[in-house]
Image (cartoon, rainbow over all chains, first blue to last red):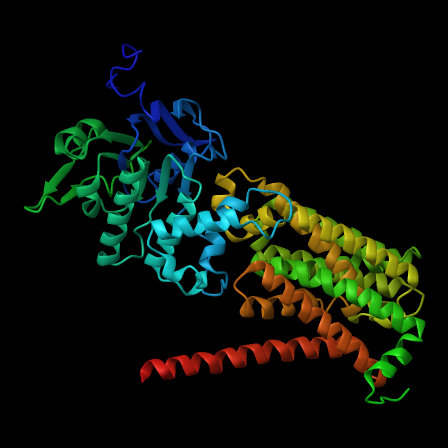
Length: 273
Length: 285
């Protein structure tokens, strides 16, 4: 198998939870990115980064089975993704929640379990217990009974994380959980995600704009820009040589003394894909 | 008919009239279904869609009136077709105010044409627009009962998935919930609830049963089941009080109902503002 896939390290593909081979994503008449190859194992924390509209959420939609690949294959738990897989927890970028939403946080977390069941049963206590356990795991019990509409961005992200964790997923997909958070809350949330993911052996993919706050926590990075996807360890992927080779244009990766990186040359490049 | 301050004898006198009995029976059923469906209408921010249903229903009702058919049939046809069309466009389309407004305006225009063509009593049009609960027949009551049972049974079955899909669409979709089915079921249930509520409150005042009680309830309760119960209670209280007052006063029931729900809504907002002011004040200390 490794013979036909020269770009993949054969080690890890078979044992991986998520694997893609020459995966091409897009819509009917438009390719978003092409020929991605990656494999993630159990318990890995992976950042998905890249400019706006590069197709980061598209990767999540493929994994969730909400969208079909245009080419290549993608497998999760050894099979093609299908919608409604209970082993995946998903935190989308935008929830339909505004300041008028006067429903308590606990109800949202509980619905992630009970919302799948038909029939009227207002007295299920096991769902409530599971929801409380999930809220405790993200240290959000103090806001459990407050309305969603009044919670801060950081508190909401904890609630959404609890909502995703309540069904004990093995894979967690987090779409821009750090947007709208200040630096302190960003750091807090990242530590929380790291703790939860490591202690439960969850494989987590996290979409972010800025990779720097994530670097201390990461096992791997998926860099999506200009229709191409680079994957691997951050130290391997985020170098001038590897990105220049992948994109065929001069890309510079700058590092400051603290290890922070800046990628120059791809943000403005909107070449044909 | 004089008000005696003895509630029991007043009610006994009221219910000795068959039209009042029918009004209370139909009004009770409609308050329950409007209170329940209204909760989801407000949660999904679909108030404008619900209003569009009632006006598309008006065109249907005026149309079947020409053919000598019970207006409720036209209301159901018109609003259900509108509901199916909007559901087919998907949830995001349901918030396209402009397109819905354009269709709604055309439907109202059609309704005006049908009414002008109608050679019967002009009061028929008036009662569709503003409600005519005091003229309800026993067969209408029976029909309303059937509709109420259908709505409540369906909501009982799809309650949790519908709540989930309404509150957290993206996660519900990813979890494999049948979004198109839930969206269509919701639209059809609202269409039925609107069609029957028109009997009490009329096409133009539909918000007073489908939106105001639920909006009041959502300010008061953070748990959906509790909010739905409050929503139903507000709708029931307004309908019963409206009928009661209208029995003694020569003004339309629909005015009293709209006035009562509006007053309740304002009171809840006012009390909450005062309560919040107190909290802020104590925090400042």
